[in-house]
Image (cartoon, rainbow, N blue to C red):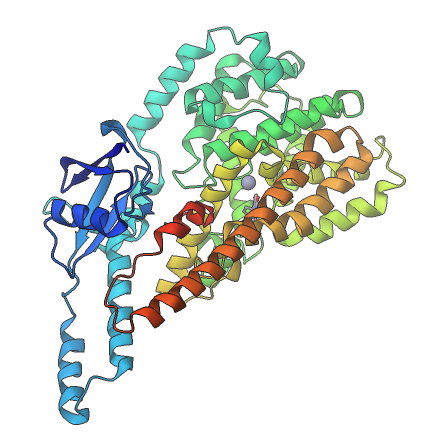
Length: 519
Ligand code: BYE
Ligand code: ZN
């Protein structure tokens, strides 16, 4: 039988471990324990390059020195002072330490660990990776890392300008019109070129007399004002815009709507999440943020995205509408505001019901009807990840849950209400997604497909596949939880005083990748 080599670093020092493929689990753990020079009561944490904690087990995926794991030791016996003296007092009075004190100690310990290890809480100044002498904790740490730096922006802008003079192939131009497009293959500067291609290929440049430098400046300002957050970032902006672009071609919207409507749709998609900070409206309102205050709790985020859009469009050098007539500009501004405000999911039923009520008599010559359709189109594009191929869609769900979990962590820390669907202790990938697809996505998509039957194939079928996929994953997860509970029971009955080994059963690890990513 062969052996396996695992590359990892400990305190920045590269190490490699070799063990036979049939090595017992305990031996593998001991191997890492000695590499870390850790004591028997220390806790070992192994991270993959993505920053997720992974199990130390014989099933560890082999890696290369370039994708090495990171091993960390956490001393287990650094109890907090007040608890220790409390424990002593109780010990004197009660004779033995009650279980509840142990439980309390465990909770304090796990909370401390979280404060020290969760990067997005690093502005608290407790984050391990930053707690060297050079790092000055600041309450603005989060604000500083949220925004893109000037260097980053200018680098991407220069690359974009350089690339935009190159010809984009017909093959890519066609691929860009389909919902199967894979956003993960393209870097930000390339994405900006692709956005430019969309404006060109819909003939907006000639129809509205848009100068190429103005379009480029506009796209650059948009890029700059999407923040570095897990989900509502520039790549999300691109995906939503690209889905809108795909829908325009698939439904042959150019034959039923005028260019102003199409320009409104595409530009609304581009701008619809500008300067999102990763915290939703409920948070804005509960935390009484500046945005909630400014917009009186009425769609604070969407109002802000829209205001930032027109801040960019107010500048002559980035105003792609600067050659439009006053009337045209008025119409497009009204349309963009309507579309972006329609992306507030608390208005979902209101908008869907309005669409349903006009569907049977839908008339493209009615402005009211077209306005509702445009709101539906941006809503569909906005939440359409699951209409994409599985390997494109699934990472987006990980990103979304990570952003949600970051928010709920902050809410817990600030004592604000926590939405159950954002709570990492309550939500799993499949449980959240099956409900969402059944009750939100499919009902919405099916109404649109009843107006445009060709969409059945392009967006409904993949969503149905995704539902099957997550339903299977949910079942597997349930089985996994059951076996885990059973093997826990047998382990306890075999060895009543088994101490310490809290690591999960390595046999259950095969399925553990189905659980939501630990963040
Ligand atoms: C929505 C609202 C705000 C931000 F947890 C994002 F189950 C979304 F609710 N989107 N966009 C795409 C989604 C998706 N929400 C969900 N699934 C998506 O695919 C469900 C969520 C994971 C949860 Cl609706
Ligand atoms: Zn969005």
